Image 1: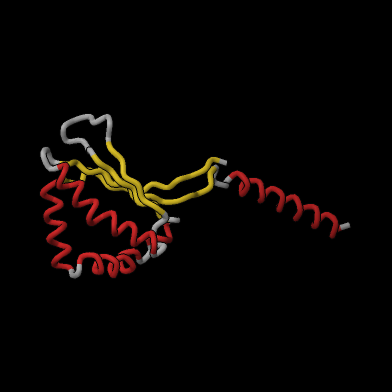
Image 2: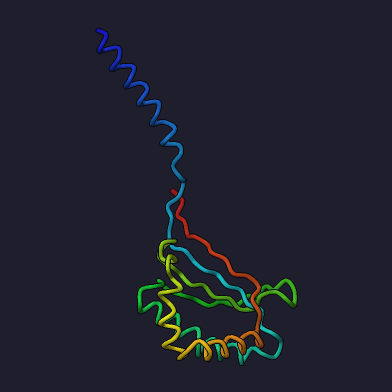
Length: 147
């Protein structure tokens, strides 16, 4: 009889312990992670900015995609600017998950050097890029699916 009471008590305690765990579950499943970048193109510099982006950023994104470092990328325009200093152009780089960001700079570096040749040449391109546009914001978002 004593064993039956102990068993029933343990079973009840175990049942009660699983209730909070079930409610503690996150109400969504995690998906891909995206780096979203918003850029303000300086007046009169759109052609130079787009030419640079097409010649330098797109090939790097394609190389990263081929290497399996990113899932995809996309570009977009701001059709509802709130001020003359708001962002004009944006892009998103899609990663499989947060783990894909671990060690990413070391993985991308050889691709960058293959494209630019050396750090000095890369820096010249970056310096020119900042003559055409400036960064408004850059942030990470995670896609989720509600359960």
